[in-house]
Image: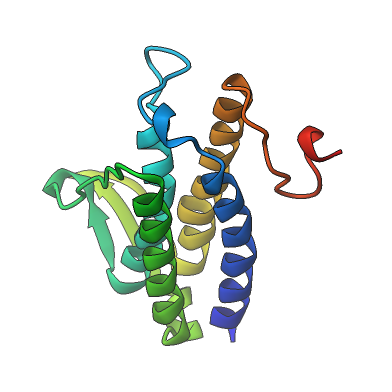
Length: 163
């Protein structure tokens, strides 16, 4: 039953994520607001791939960054970006459909070699490590868009550009 709640929330948040990703100008993928910042293209590609992290949380008992299994996706076009997000979203929704409450309550560990970053019930890891992660980066994208003078869509109600 918990899986249905996660699916509903994920789909609700995905609609906002799609709205902001659709606004990203392809010709600005290389733009950075600061030398220490990710480029806009890397940031939006990261957001598009993050539903796959939820899949890892659901399917694996642990993820170890030190093992080097993570390969960043670098979308080159807006179409690739939207396709990546939809593909990863569809995959995690399918995985969630088949995930029991018992599995959602079982622990997941995120580590980097011997350093354990966190061990949490999967349902908490999905929320704190994955969904909140997407929401955080969506906020960064909104700032990037504002700095580029691109109208920012409303995410939890109308934005200043929609008033």
